[in-house]
Amino acid sequence: MRKLFSAVITVGVLLSSTAANAGQTLLMSSWLPPKHPVVAYIINPWIEVVEQESGGDLKIKILPKALGAPPSAFDLAKDGVADVTYGVHGYQPGRFKLTAATEMPFLGESAEDVSVAYWRTYKKHLEKANEHEGVHLLGLMSHGPGVIHNNVRAINSVEDMKGLKFRVGGGVAGNAAKSLGVTAMLASATKNYEMLSSGVADGTFLPTESIRSFKLTKLLTHATTLPGGLYNTSFFLVMNPAKYDGLTEANKEALGRASGEKFARIAGQGWDRADAEGLAAMQADGIKIIAASEAFVDQVRQATAHIESGWVETANGLGVDGVQVMADMRAEIASLAAE
Image 1 (tube, helix red, strand yellow):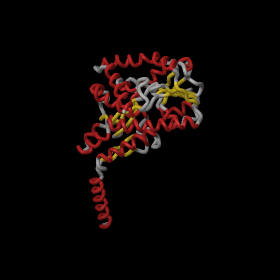
Image 2 (cartoon, rainbow, N blue to C red):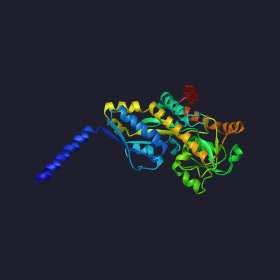
Image 3 (cartoon, rainbow, N blue to C red):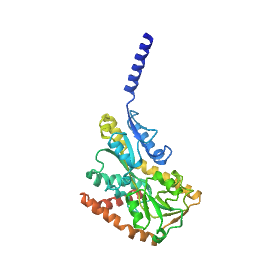
Image 4 (spheres, rainbow, N blue to C red):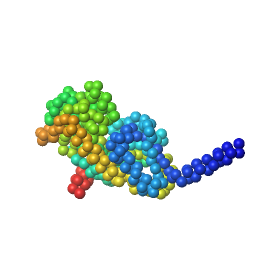
């Protein structure tokens, strides 16, 4: 009995010592698998930077299973179900109105340029609207240029899109699809394989990265690229505010150094790398890729022009100068692209 008591005391002392030296750990819910580029090229590298900046005192552990479906990611952090989450603003239509600034057609060829410009523009213009109320915002990002993919025919005009059904991720992508005369079906990116393989969808709007990462190269036959992309998609990286408040001051500072614009660069570089790999996989599996003709680009510009003007009107109503936001966003992207 004495030996057992002694062993319990010893274990207790060891656990207390370990806890005292373990620093702080945050738990992250991830709805994408470990090998997906968002996790492998973006989230994991960011976690490494967080640990480096904190001298190993702050760690972030990705849970083995998501705590909710993709559209619930924001609220998982808000409600304290998870400490840290990431997700797509457009998966909750109508909730986030200003984040579409980074989703407009023809913004840029590089996710890094667009993501960094997005963060700078957010800090300058959009932060005051407090659309991320209820969480501590760690970062924002945009994937690479959105591409038109399908398994029916080559698309090089608005007429070619008529009657086709496309899976879209919401936000500007969904509005663009409707403006181009197709049937738009809102679903998260994880539903692509199911919808395309079953014939529910004829195509999908995605960056080239996603064709490889979601194993869609055998389900698609055609792709059309547009200069700067048909659209982009806005993502958030957020944290439960109570968990943030519970961090030491040193760890708050370390997390800040690793996040914000630093996260935008990490994320953008990860997306650009994944896009290059996705394009190579598409070419290897024989997907026919064409660049949109000038005539088609003009058609798309005309058909989607109302999306930006409508967003500007919404932004103005929320006390944000929408025209200035888009001018600054484009200027930042151009400046970054020229570096």
